[in-house]
Each structure stands twice: as C-alpha cells, then as structure tokens.
Image 1 (cartoon, helix red, strand yellow):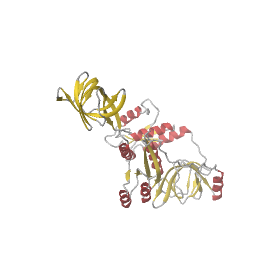
Image 2: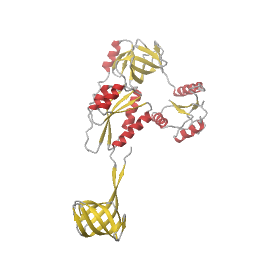
Image 3: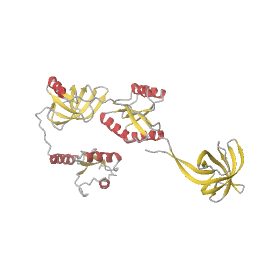
Image 4: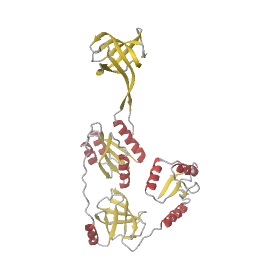
Length: 415
C-alpha cells in the first residue's frame, strides 16, 4: 500500500481510516508525502502527526519508508517507485506467467456509453483478450481490453491492473476471477463450484416503537465508493436508530429510485459522485423525497449525520429540586389552586413541575405557576421557609399533600 498524505495539510480523518485498513490487513506500506512543491509544505510536521497514530517512519524511531514527492512536478517519483519495488522484493512475491490468469476485482462502475467497466488485478498467470472470464460464478466475455492508461492491449501479465469492458453483471469488489481458453472450460469450472446458499433478506421488525428506522436508497459512481458508503452509513446505527439500505446501486439517481422511495416511509436517497436530472429532482420534490448528494465522502456523511440527528427524539432528564408540604388550601377554581405550604427539603422554584404525593402514593401532577413569600412574588423558596403558590393541576390538592418538585432538562441526542 502507498499511504498518500498532503505535506501542506495534516493527518485527516480519511488518513486515519486508511491507516486502520492498512494495519488491519497487515499490509507492507510506504508513505508518500505529496505536494512538497507548495511553499506551505511541512513534511516534518506530518511525520510527527503520523507518530501520534503509531506510524513511525524512518528517522523517527520506526522502519516505515517515507518519500517526499510532488505529483504535480514529478519530483522524487522515481524514489517512490524504487521504495515500492524494495518492499515487493522483501515480500518475496512470485507468479507463473504461463498459467491462465487469476486475480481479483478491484473496481467496477457503470459507464453510460460503454456499459459495465471493471478493473481487475492479475495476481497470477497471463490474461489474454480472447480468454473467457469467470467472475464469481458468472461467465463473461471480454469485449474491450485496456491497460490502466486506457490503451487497448492484447495480453497482460502478473501484477498488472487491467480494465475490461462489456461485462453482463457488475461484479462486487473483492470477487475473484479466473480466465479460460474456451467457453466449455469456463462452464465446466462453474459447474464444479459449490452451490451457494441463497439467503433471503428479512425485513427488520420493530419490537419497540421508540426505535427509528432510517431507510436509504444509495447510488454511487463506482462499486468501491458504494461499498465504503454502505459500511460508513451502517456505523451510524445505535440501539434507538436502525439504518436500512433498501437499495444500493451504481449510476445516476433515476426516476425508478424516487418511485421506490415513495413506496416506503422515511426514505432518503443518497448519491455519491452521481448526478440527478432536473426531471428526477422535480419528481422527488413532488413526492417530498429528500435527496442528499456530494462528491467528498466525509462532507456527504456529515450531511447525512445532521439529518439523522434531527430524527432522534430529545432525552428528557429529570432534575429533582425539593420537597414541599401543603399546609393550607385557600382557593380552588378549575385547575387553578391557591395554597400555602412549607419547603421540607432542597429549594423549590417558580415553574417547577410536581408529583402530588398523598399517603405515599402519587395521585397527580401539577406545576408551580407562581410563588409568593410574605405576599411578595419570588422565583424560589429555600428549605424551612413557608410560601404561597398558584398551583396548576387537574388533581385537587389537600392539606397534608407532599409535592415532589423537579425540573425537566431537554437534551438533544447526538451520534
């Protein structure tokens, strides 16, 4: 792996995520400090920030090779290539170019003009344009065969990334492929594969009405972006919030996506690096379907997160204030009651809510609308002092009742 970090910026969240992937998969890697042509570039600061992420480069107590480069001017690119070759040599990688090719799908997308376009990495053997491919359990014919520059080629050897065009199905990232000389060989290989167990997708059932289901229709430019977005969106799930991806695909947001959204409650269409035609936007507005699009993954996820936070109900936290005893009832009209009492514990405040306790049982609730002390309006009364109050409650107060007074704090939930 090559971890690219801009020398004129800092270690960003996406850098940290890339580091986590590299370490999780135990990949040998080098660091490319890019943009050293800029006046504000500070490679040493970046190395220090990487050290905080437990990435120690050579010269900083570690053995991770680090090369300062400029992709714009080409400075030190040869040094980076030499470093990659050295890492590969240390891994003692080997391949047999005389075998039929085997490898893995590293990218796929749907091109509006050319159809399904996939990038394959040949891990062993040689791939030829006339070969028949088996990707997963599907037989595919190569119609257009290109190198990573987009130049048409006839063959490609081990470790080569190649682009194939004209596949019937969009393959998943990470799917393996094998090449065969004839259709018969490919079909025989597919027949030998173990039968996949078909897993039906069961809809999420809500056992508790407080759980919020956020339904998503996801569209992305390529399958790699699609996979990353699916994983990132699922990370927003909590005990009270469930993320359901109703549909996920590659390509621009279409009318069929909007129509699918209208059939389901609380649906948001999310598009990463895709377009939405004016007619599709108009249809979405007609049915009040929310569409969020963006070209930078972290900005797009932040916008989705903002929408999710708005859905979460606030947490109501009770803060106990004090306890008061009703000594005298002066007036009672409908829900307004005038009474006198004494603060037994804590401090009571104007506007406090109250549980009415009678013979140790809660018999009702109310609010201290007004407070008086010595016939003067006050905002609070402390322990041991007597007071008068206008108390609002549907439950008539009685002498000897105890009021457990409290305030409610509304806390907005976050993710």
